[in-house]
Length: 432
Image 1 (tube, rainbow, N blue to C red):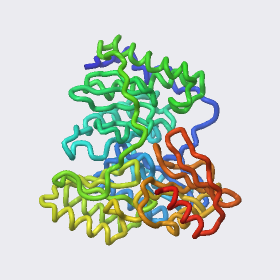
Image 2 (image 1 turned 90 degrees about the horizontal axis):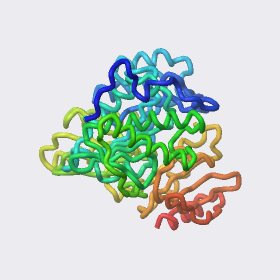
Image 3 (image 1 turned 45 degrees about the horizontal axis):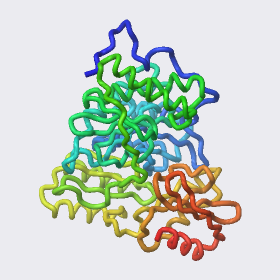
Image 4 (image 1 turned 90 degrees about the vertical axis):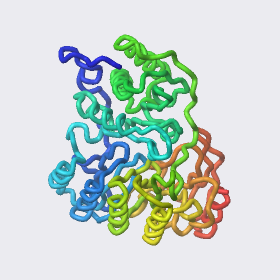
């Protein structure tokens, strides 16, 4: 195990104060609201996407008391509250703190942790110990508050789902140990499983020191030679403190994530649903919370705008009944739903930068299930877009551009006029 640092010797993340960068981090949180065209916006970090039913109730209470009542899932398994009064910040923070959703005001935007949503449910390793320890370490480190709201930790149970997301620091379960990946590097190194969370924090601290000179917000923003040095420095520090890091081994990052398919999982140990365009009404949220209370008291929000309900489904019929009720409420409960794989940014009128109401356009273009996911963006920023292989639809002043994206490669873009039938046909053809 990594030895605990004595009080007189601060850890790499608690030494030296905040990293120096040009400009401020504009990522919204719960204490600094973001002004949008539909009101203020709060982004509530939910490490690992894990919510108890009581905390889910608190989020709904906040949405109904201060905002438009809906809950919006993000591509990192967090929750956004929209339509907020700009003056509600203090009362919102008080409500979330009382519910245990804001354990550290200084770290509320740094608690970006995604985890394999089916971990521990289908024979794969459980990640709850890693998750709670890493979140505690982040909140306990003064300098970790310097991590930007864009910096991302990932905890992968070995199936490669969140490893494919290109996090800044990834821990991968591997037998009785774990693998540590820095950024999207193809090389990883093995460490004891019990050392994983501390190693992840160590890696984040090494990144912060490198970012002082480069101004980078994320590992991928570092110059190539600096990024390589970060991994070498992390391994050297692990060896120095515990003799715990094995040699680097080649394990390329998966290029395409495989989200949990909507439906039952295990025997069944869980059910999974996807959320059309990531937007949940109060009635849908209440039904999900009620289902969780009946079958284990937990919800897991996924980085693909879905929700896994782990629990004690005694018979397949129990899972089928729960899925039937959720389907009747408008959620995606089977892979053959026309909505499966369809995503969009908030678009117009919620975002001033958007050139179109892409959510309405995405709904109008829903048709046969496509082989590839499709994501509609109201502008070139493509907020919340997926990773891996997908169809990219972007609104432009003259219509839309449709392109096939495969990792870093983008096929030539097809320009499509603002004609609903033509646009739907072009998207269907691209997805097929």
